[in-house]
Image (cartoon, rainbow, N blue to C red; front, side, top):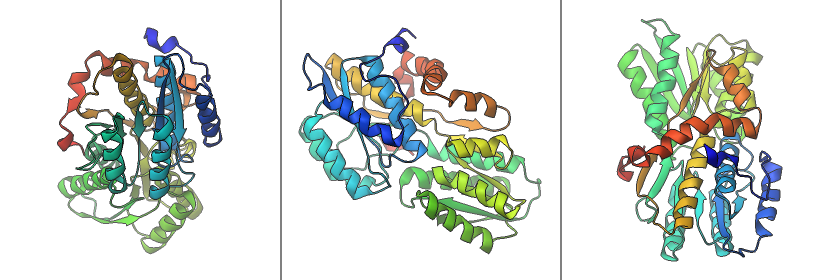
Length: 355
């Protein structure tokens, strides 16, 4: 794709939690002159892999489009009210549009509607906007489908007549997309391994320390479980750490592409991780926003479906190589991005069907 060759003035360095602030400072320096569009990218947590991946993908799309000052903001730890305040603050200066990922959709309903009423285009990313938000474009996975994929991968590694317990964790209960993953897991086991009982989902928290402690309690309470499965970022590496510390023989698996998670799949501690492909999602959301605003068009309406990826021993080396640098990520999503934007209508579904 020719579009992948552009580099904006803020550079192409991979964002880390520390460099998000630097990126914001760089974006603020432009002042919006010369037709430059001032936009924002808001995430739920600037410390965890899933949010950093989305932010980096968004930064790539903004640089690729050119003429965009992008301000990336989010709390240091998951904090819905603080994220709402940061969103409201940033759109007072960066009024040309915002991509927002959050884990508290109820808290964002009114602020979203207020922003839309002011003429600020909003793209909801990774968490479905609730009724009343007036946000009409959502970019995200089929999370129920992702849950079924994790369950199917576990079932492949269990006896056909397996009986016992699976322990299921959700870091933020009540977040629809995470609950959908859990539902996909539960339903798949009920259908394909009826002798297995799925316990939970239990709250396992997105903070790494809290996640480890929550899973430690579950492992102690369920020593004979067949598997421990989580649907969030920290679940994967918390379970890998506990499995090594306890010498556990149970299956452990989860989501996302944190470096510790990739290491756990590489060394066989975790049998799989399901990648929602957050970098690609962030790129897609930001590119849709940038193209609409720069062309003076309305945003598409509906759920823009983006695919996930099963990462196991068969492709872990390729994914580790892809995740080694931001340029490798950019190169790695090129073919998928080209396919998605060759016919965007093919990936648009009714917003009411988002899950």
